[in-house]
Structure formats: C-alpha cells, structure tokens
Image 1 (tube, rainbow, N blue to C red):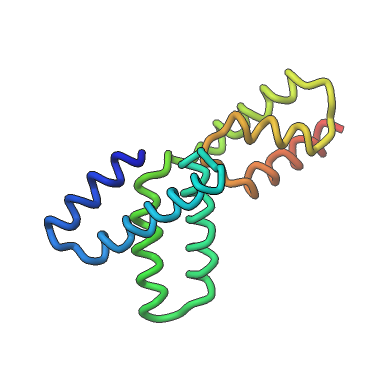
Image 2 (cartoon, rainbow, N blue to C red):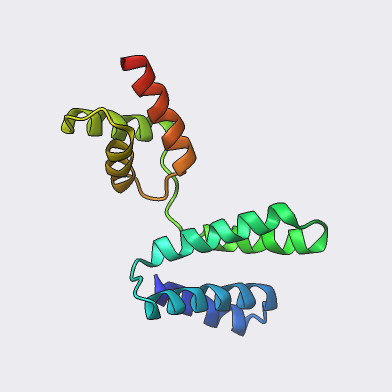
Length: 135
C-alpha cells in the first residue's frame, strides 16, 4: 500500500494537483509515524486516520469541512470496502458456532478479527440484537 500511495503522490505532483498531493503526503506521514511507534498494520493506521478526519468534519463548517470531505474521499480509496450487513451477520454466526461462550466481549473481538474495515458500531449493534434474540 505504501508503494501505491507513493506512486499516486508522484502522479499528483506531476499533474500539479496540490490538494491530492497534500492529502497523500499527510497519509504517508501518518503511516510512517505509526511505523516508528511500532504499528505495522497500514490499513489500521489509515482507519484510525479516517476516524480522526470524520470526527473533525463533524466539528467544522464551511470550507474547512469541504476540505476534510475531500480528504476523507481520498483516504477511502486506499481502504478495503466495508463488509455488507450480510457478511457481518455471517461472520457473527460463524463466530457464535466456533465459540462456546455467549459473552459479548470475546464474540465481538473474534468477529472483528474476521472482518476487515467493518464499522465497529454496526457490528456491535448486530451482535447485541442476535444475542438478545437467542437468549
């Protein structure tokens, strides 16, 4: 992924796309800083960066918000697509069958490990719904 970002950065610089160049530089700096701190999962780093951007976009208004939305759009292109509700449901069911416990925490953790780029809130809500209906 780092190579893809660097190549896209070169292309953005050649085409003199200042906004995309700036965004890609920020992404690179986030990944490099995370690697220096011991985090090697680049997708997880970008997901955390995306959360910061979304939170910031909620706070700002006007032109700054539009800039953040552009940044969110670009970062989203480098993240894998989120799973569908059906894929989440299947992962929960599979986890429930493989674990003997009905405790929320271990099931949630195991389910999230199976799903890449899933919305934790959505997984949590679906898991709670399934656990309450099975009791």
